Image (cartoon, rainbow, N blue to C red; front, side, top):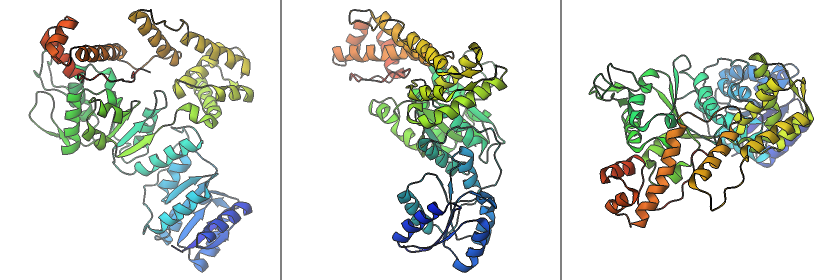
Length: 483
């Protein structure tokens, strides 16, 4: 599809490269070097697509995007910027830009974006409210740019979002950013860690309960859905939700209403759902531990957060940010030496951003030097590695208790000076019980009566455990959710 494209950038080399790439793609291309030049070109060239940089000697390209769209509503605006922050991506979308591409960009991606823009009759209209300076997400690496672009696309609607990523990558920060920059920002943001709620209380926690619904229910209590009315409900660790609660949640997502435990009246659910998990939900579905229909209801817009080891270019900026936060909290102000940043970039970061933040706070609190150099970083990283490997590798002859203890020691060490998420006791018990029950059933070819005898359990107790833990007769290999 051939079209008239105006390229605006104060860098002559960039203008030339884009001009040639779009010309070879069949477009008619003109260029401008400033905002004033842009204004002169518009009435003469009448572009069908505008590709513009942000920073010019005579102004800011983002500031004039709403004006350009108002004057030329059928002209999509594609924004290019070397200021690759979350705020830039969000503001470009808020100002009505069709797309935001961070520099350096791929010419093929730019050409494809121009083609997509040509198929769009009108640019998106998004409420304009400049964000604050305290960025909710830090980083300029390519993986984070994709995260920013996805967030920018969903803040103006109520689509359900599923945030995926390893523990410590910042999934709740993404959920908060979507809420804080969206239309529901003046309403509650309610976060609930599904893994931290005892299995028998989770439905009451989410949907509330009426007085007398169960022993100890002395009064009516509003659940998290009701508390979040008009706002956002963030369901963290959704992969750990029991099957019966999954069924209730699916019903709410399908019908848009819920009933408290022990109640007959239906309450309209005016909430935006954002869910998150570090687990592989397709694997859980294949193992019978997660409902496939619920997965499709939640996975409307997936946001995949990269682990810190895949965004090494962001580590220096994150380290400085965490030192600034530590100073704001009353700890001594410190700066990090560039050589120390290089060491940080070489670390594997099993605890991800949470581990880096804990390290920076520890360095700010415990070191006397104002400048954090390579030796201090090496010392602290070595201490963390030593704690993680404090005990030798468990030999095959070691007991089950020793193996579990060392596994948990590595888990605790990954969180540094902080602690793992609440509810660890119940999660560990569940993960020990699941393989035990599976192996017992496999040993007796699925006969529950024989399995109960083998385990020394009452048959009804075994049946309840199999139901609660979603355990079938097959022996399956399951990744430990506290890894």
